[in-house]
Length: 279
DNA sequence: GACCAGGTATTGC
DNA sequence: GCAATACATGGT
Image 1 (cartoon, rainbow, N blue to C red):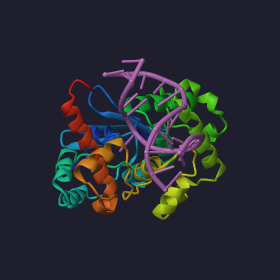
Image 2: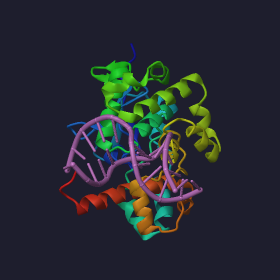
Image 3: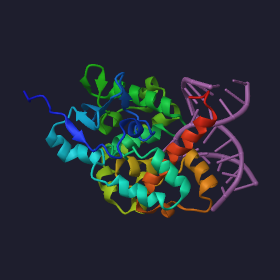
Image 4: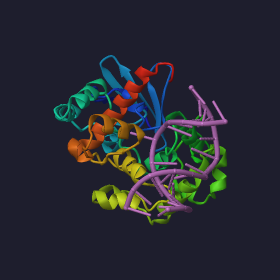
Protein backbone atom coordinates (compact mmCIF):
# COMPACT_ATOMS: atom_id res chain seq x y z
CA UNK A 1 0.00 0.00 0.00
CA UNK A 2 1.17 3.49 -0.82
CA UNK A 3 1.70 5.96 1.97
CA UNK A 4 -0.93 8.67 2.33
CA UNK A 5 -0.19 11.56 0.02
CA UNK A 6 1.41 14.64 1.49
CA UNK A 7 -0.55 17.75 0.54
CA UNK A 8 0.96 19.65 -2.36
CA UNK A 9 1.21 23.42 -2.22
CA UNK A 10 -0.29 25.40 -5.08
CA UNK A 11 0.71 28.85 -6.23
CA UNK A 12 -1.50 31.22 -4.17
CA UNK A 13 -0.92 34.39 -6.26
CA UNK A 14 -3.51 34.87 -8.97
CA UNK A 15 -5.20 31.64 -7.99
CA UNK A 16 -8.54 31.64 -6.24
CA UNK A 17 -10.15 28.21 -6.06
CA UNK A 18 -13.62 29.72 -6.01
CA UNK A 19 -13.01 31.93 -9.05
CA UNK A 20 -11.19 29.22 -10.94
CA UNK A 21 -13.68 26.43 -10.35
CA UNK A 22 -16.84 28.54 -10.61
CA UNK A 23 -16.02 30.64 -13.66
CA UNK A 24 -17.76 28.28 -16.07
CA UNK A 25 -14.69 26.63 -17.55
CA UNK A 26 -15.21 23.33 -15.71
CA UNK A 27 -18.24 21.49 -14.43
CA UNK A 28 -16.95 18.82 -12.09
CA UNK A 29 -15.39 20.73 -9.22
CA UNK A 30 -17.84 21.08 -6.34
CA UNK A 31 -17.73 23.41 -3.35
CA UNK A 32 -17.75 21.53 -0.05
CA UNK A 33 -19.40 22.89 3.11
CA UNK A 34 -16.02 24.03 4.46
CA UNK A 35 -15.31 26.12 1.37
CA UNK A 36 -12.80 23.77 -0.21
CA UNK A 37 -13.38 22.18 -3.62
CA UNK A 38 -13.58 18.54 -4.57
CA UNK A 39 -12.90 17.39 -8.10
CA UNK A 40 -12.26 14.17 -10.00
CA UNK A 41 -9.46 14.19 -12.54
CA UNK A 42 -8.09 11.05 -14.20
CA UNK A 43 -10.11 8.97 -11.78
CA UNK A 44 -8.43 10.60 -8.80
CA UNK A 45 -10.44 12.36 -6.11
CA UNK A 46 -8.82 15.70 -5.38
CA UNK A 47 -9.38 18.45 -2.86
CA UNK A 48 -8.19 22.03 -3.17
CA UNK A 49 -8.47 24.21 -0.10
CA UNK A 50 -7.31 27.54 1.18
CA UNK A 51 -5.29 27.36 4.42
CA UNK A 52 -4.45 30.85 5.48
CA UNK A 53 -2.19 32.22 2.79
CA UNK A 54 -1.57 28.79 1.33
CA UNK A 55 -3.58 26.72 -1.12
CA UNK A 56 -3.15 22.99 -0.84
CA UNK A 57 -3.95 20.15 -3.20
CA UNK A 58 -4.77 16.81 -1.62
CA UNK A 59 -5.23 13.51 -3.38
CA UNK A 60 -2.21 13.63 -5.65
CA UNK A 61 1.39 12.79 -4.86
CA UNK A 62 4.23 15.19 -5.48
CA UNK A 63 5.22 13.05 -8.43
CA UNK A 64 1.72 13.22 -9.91
CA UNK A 65 1.80 16.95 -9.38
CA UNK A 66 5.12 17.28 -11.15
CA UNK A 67 4.10 15.13 -14.10
CA UNK A 68 0.48 16.20 -14.53
CA UNK A 69 -1.28 18.50 -12.10
CA UNK A 70 1.17 21.36 -12.26
CA UNK A 71 0.17 21.71 -15.88
CA UNK A 72 -3.50 20.98 -15.14
CA UNK A 73 -3.61 23.98 -12.79
CA UNK A 74 -1.47 26.11 -15.13
CA UNK A 75 0.93 26.74 -12.29
CA UNK A 76 3.89 27.80 -14.40
CA UNK A 77 2.28 30.77 -16.06
CA UNK A 78 2.90 34.27 -14.73
CA UNK A 79 -0.67 35.53 -14.45
CA UNK A 80 0.56 38.78 -12.92
CA UNK A 81 2.38 39.55 -16.14
CA UNK A 82 -0.62 38.50 -18.23
CA UNK A 83 -2.91 40.76 -16.18
CA UNK A 84 -0.56 43.71 -16.57
CA UNK A 85 -0.38 43.28 -20.33
CA UNK A 86 -4.12 42.89 -20.70
CA UNK A 87 -4.89 45.76 -18.35
CA UNK A 88 -2.82 48.09 -20.50
CA UNK A 89 -5.06 47.37 -23.49
CA UNK A 90 -8.35 48.70 -22.20
CA UNK A 91 -9.91 50.12 -19.02
CA UNK A 92 -12.86 47.70 -19.00
CA UNK A 93 -10.54 44.76 -19.41
CA UNK A 94 -8.36 46.20 -16.66
CA UNK A 95 -11.33 46.21 -14.32
CA UNK A 96 -12.21 42.65 -15.30
CA UNK A 97 -8.62 41.59 -14.62
CA UNK A 98 -8.57 43.06 -11.15
CA UNK A 99 -12.00 41.72 -10.19
CA UNK A 100 -11.23 38.19 -11.41
CA UNK A 101 -7.48 37.98 -11.04
CA UNK A 102 -7.91 34.67 -9.22
CA UNK A 103 -9.05 32.80 -12.32
CA UNK A 104 -6.60 30.32 -13.79
CA UNK A 105 -7.34 28.52 -17.03
CA UNK A 106 -7.35 24.82 -16.24
CA UNK A 107 -5.87 22.43 -18.74
CA UNK A 108 -8.54 19.77 -18.47
CA UNK A 109 -8.42 16.48 -20.25
CA UNK A 110 -9.28 16.98 -23.92
CA UNK A 111 -11.95 14.28 -24.07
CA UNK A 112 -13.69 15.61 -20.98
CA UNK A 113 -13.55 19.16 -22.32
CA UNK A 114 -14.94 18.02 -25.65
CA UNK A 115 -17.92 16.28 -24.05
CA UNK A 116 -18.49 19.05 -21.52
CA UNK A 117 -18.78 21.75 -24.13
CA UNK A 118 -20.89 19.62 -26.44
CA UNK A 119 -23.27 19.33 -23.49
CA UNK A 120 -22.99 23.09 -22.96
CA UNK A 121 -24.56 24.13 -26.23
CA UNK A 122 -27.78 26.11 -25.89
CA UNK A 123 -27.78 25.19 -22.21
CA UNK A 124 -27.17 26.81 -18.84
CA UNK A 125 -24.34 26.10 -16.43
CA UNK A 126 -26.32 24.46 -13.58
CA UNK A 127 -27.98 22.09 -16.01
CA UNK A 128 -24.69 21.33 -17.78
CA UNK A 129 -23.28 20.29 -14.42
CA UNK A 130 -26.25 18.03 -13.77
CA UNK A 131 -25.98 16.33 -17.15
CA UNK A 132 -22.25 15.72 -16.75
CA UNK A 133 -22.76 14.43 -13.22
CA UNK A 134 -25.36 11.90 -14.43
CA UNK A 135 -23.14 11.02 -17.41
CA UNK A 136 -20.29 10.07 -15.06
CA UNK A 137 -22.57 8.29 -12.59
CA UNK A 138 -24.14 6.21 -15.35
CA UNK A 139 -21.11 5.38 -17.46
CA UNK A 140 -17.95 6.21 -15.50
CA UNK A 141 -15.87 3.82 -13.43
CA UNK A 142 -16.49 4.17 -9.70
CA UNK A 143 -13.38 5.54 -8.02
CA UNK A 144 -14.63 6.24 -4.49
CA UNK A 145 -17.86 6.25 -2.51
CA UNK A 146 -20.39 7.94 -4.81
CA UNK A 147 -17.59 9.28 -7.01
CA UNK A 148 -17.15 8.34 -10.63
CA UNK A 149 -14.45 8.91 -13.20
CA UNK A 150 -15.26 10.61 -16.47
CA UNK A 151 -16.45 7.89 -18.90
CA UNK A 152 -13.95 6.78 -21.50
CA UNK A 153 -14.58 7.37 -25.20
CA UNK A 154 -14.32 3.60 -25.73
CA UNK A 155 -17.20 2.96 -23.33
CA UNK A 156 -19.41 5.66 -24.82
CA UNK A 157 -18.62 4.61 -28.39
CA UNK A 158 -20.40 1.29 -27.76
CA UNK A 159 -23.66 3.02 -26.86
CA UNK A 160 -26.55 4.15 -28.99
CA UNK A 161 -27.85 7.70 -28.39
CA UNK A 162 -30.98 6.30 -26.72
CA UNK A 163 -28.80 4.84 -23.97
CA UNK A 164 -28.03 8.38 -22.85
CA UNK A 165 -31.71 9.09 -22.13
CA UNK A 166 -31.25 8.86 -18.32
CA UNK A 167 -28.82 11.76 -18.29
CA UNK A 168 -31.42 14.00 -20.00
CA UNK A 169 -29.00 15.71 -22.34
CA UNK A 170 -31.64 16.05 -25.03
CA UNK A 171 -30.55 16.44 -28.63
CA UNK A 172 -26.88 16.52 -27.58
CA UNK A 173 -26.80 12.76 -26.96
CA UNK A 174 -26.19 11.91 -30.61
CA UNK A 175 -23.34 14.42 -30.72
CA UNK A 176 -21.63 12.76 -27.76
CA UNK A 177 -21.90 9.35 -29.41
CA UNK A 178 -20.40 10.70 -32.62
CA UNK A 179 -17.55 12.30 -30.70
CA UNK A 180 -16.86 9.08 -28.80
CA UNK A 181 -16.82 6.98 -31.94
CA UNK A 182 -14.44 9.32 -33.72
CA UNK A 183 -12.08 9.47 -30.76
CA UNK A 184 -12.25 5.77 -29.87
CA UNK A 185 -11.95 4.79 -33.51
CA UNK A 186 -8.87 6.92 -34.03
CA UNK A 187 -10.39 9.25 -36.64
CA UNK A 188 -9.90 12.11 -34.18
CA UNK A 189 -6.70 11.98 -32.15
CA UNK A 190 -7.07 14.63 -29.46
CA UNK A 191 -3.40 14.53 -28.46
CA UNK A 192 -2.48 15.34 -32.04
CA UNK A 193 -5.13 18.05 -32.31
CA UNK A 194 -3.71 19.69 -29.19
CA UNK A 195 -0.43 20.48 -30.95
CA UNK A 196 -1.74 21.22 -34.46
CA UNK A 197 -1.60 24.63 -36.02
CA UNK A 198 -4.65 26.45 -34.69
CA UNK A 199 -6.68 26.53 -37.89
CA UNK A 200 -6.15 22.84 -38.54
CA UNK A 201 -6.99 22.01 -34.94
CA UNK A 202 -10.29 23.89 -35.27
CA UNK A 203 -11.12 22.04 -38.46
CA UNK A 204 -10.30 18.68 -36.92
CA UNK A 205 -12.52 19.31 -33.90
CA UNK A 206 -15.37 20.53 -36.07
CA UNK A 207 -15.48 17.23 -37.94
CA UNK A 208 -17.46 16.02 -34.93
CA UNK A 209 -21.19 16.36 -35.47
CA UNK A 210 -22.39 18.97 -33.01
CA UNK A 211 -19.05 20.73 -32.67
CA UNK A 212 -19.04 24.19 -34.21
CA UNK A 213 -16.74 27.18 -33.75
CA UNK A 214 -17.66 27.92 -30.15
CA UNK A 215 -17.29 24.38 -28.81
CA UNK A 216 -14.04 23.92 -30.73
CA UNK A 217 -12.60 27.08 -29.14
CA UNK A 218 -13.62 25.87 -25.69
CA UNK A 219 -11.93 22.50 -26.21
CA UNK A 220 -8.78 24.23 -27.39
CA UNK A 221 -8.75 26.71 -24.53
CA UNK A 222 -9.91 24.59 -21.59
CA UNK A 223 -8.78 21.15 -22.71
CA UNK A 224 -5.62 21.76 -24.67
CA UNK A 225 -3.96 24.79 -23.14
CA UNK A 226 -4.30 26.82 -26.33
CA UNK A 227 -4.62 30.26 -24.80
CA UNK A 228 -4.95 32.00 -28.13
CA UNK A 229 -8.38 30.36 -28.52
CA UNK A 230 -11.26 32.77 -27.91
CA UNK A 231 -14.72 31.23 -27.48
CA UNK A 232 -17.48 33.57 -28.64
CA UNK A 233 -20.60 32.73 -26.68
CA UNK A 234 -23.65 34.90 -26.09
CA UNK A 235 -22.04 36.70 -23.14
CA UNK A 236 -18.77 37.44 -24.91
CA UNK A 237 -20.63 38.62 -28.00
CA UNK A 238 -22.49 41.09 -25.79
CA UNK A 239 -19.38 42.39 -24.06
CA UNK A 240 -17.51 42.63 -27.37
CA UNK A 241 -20.34 44.59 -28.99
CA UNK A 242 -20.55 46.98 -26.05
CA UNK A 243 -16.90 47.55 -25.15
CA UNK A 244 -14.82 46.34 -28.10
CA UNK A 245 -16.78 47.17 -31.25
CA UNK A 246 -14.88 46.21 -34.38
CA UNK A 247 -12.16 44.44 -32.39
CA UNK A 248 -11.12 40.88 -33.18
CA UNK A 249 -9.82 38.28 -30.69
CA UNK A 250 -6.22 38.94 -31.75
CA UNK A 251 -6.60 42.41 -30.23
CA UNK A 252 -6.04 40.67 -26.89
CA UNK A 253 -2.78 39.06 -27.93
CA UNK A 254 -1.37 35.56 -27.40
CA UNK A 255 -3.35 35.07 -24.17
CA UNK A 256 -6.65 36.17 -25.67
CA UNK A 257 -8.33 33.17 -24.08
CA UNK A 258 -7.47 34.44 -20.61
CA UNK A 259 -8.86 37.86 -21.50
CA UNK A 260 -11.98 36.11 -22.75
CA UNK A 261 -12.39 34.37 -19.40
CA UNK A 262 -11.97 37.58 -17.41
CA UNK A 263 -14.52 39.28 -19.65
CA UNK A 264 -16.94 36.37 -19.36
CA UNK A 265 -16.80 36.65 -15.57
CA UNK A 266 -17.05 40.43 -15.69
CA UNK A 267 -20.04 40.41 -18.01
CA UNK A 268 -21.97 37.93 -15.89
CA UNK A 269 -20.96 39.73 -12.70
CA UNK A 270 -22.38 43.00 -14.02
CA UNK A 271 -25.52 41.28 -15.22
CA UNK A 272 -26.14 39.80 -11.79
CA UNK A 273 -25.55 43.16 -10.12
CA UNK A 274 -28.35 44.52 -12.30
CA UNK A 275 -30.63 41.61 -11.53
CA UNK A 276 -29.95 40.60 -7.93
CA UNK A 277 -33.18 38.57 -7.75
CA UNK A 278 -31.83 36.04 -10.25
CA UNK A 279 -29.12 33.63 -9.28
C1' DG B 1 -46.78 30.17 -21.63
C1' DA B 2 -42.99 32.76 -23.44
C1' DC B 3 -38.23 33.23 -23.06
C1' DC B 4 -33.52 31.95 -22.12
C1' DA B 5 -29.35 29.06 -21.55
C1' DG B 6 -20.93 29.17 -22.47
C1' DG B 7 -24.67 26.61 -30.22
C1' DT B 8 -25.13 23.83 -34.18
C1' DA B 9 -27.30 21.62 -38.21
C1' DT B 10 -30.64 22.22 -41.40
C1' DT B 11 -33.50 24.70 -44.30
C1' DG B 12 -35.08 28.42 -47.27
C1' DC B 13 -34.21 32.50 -49.93
C1' DG C 1 -23.55 32.93 -48.82
C1' DC C 2 -26.60 34.44 -44.99
C1' DA C 3 -30.86 34.81 -42.09
C1' DA C 4 -34.42 31.98 -39.82
C1' DT C 5 -35.65 27.77 -37.47
C1' DA C 6 -35.67 23.32 -34.87
C1' DC C 7 -33.55 21.03 -31.41
C1' DA C 8 -34.48 18.58 -25.46
C1' DT C 9 -34.69 20.10 -21.11
C1' DG C 10 -35.42 22.81 -17.07
C1' DG C 11 -35.53 27.26 -14.71
C1' DT C 12 -37.51 31.98 -14.28
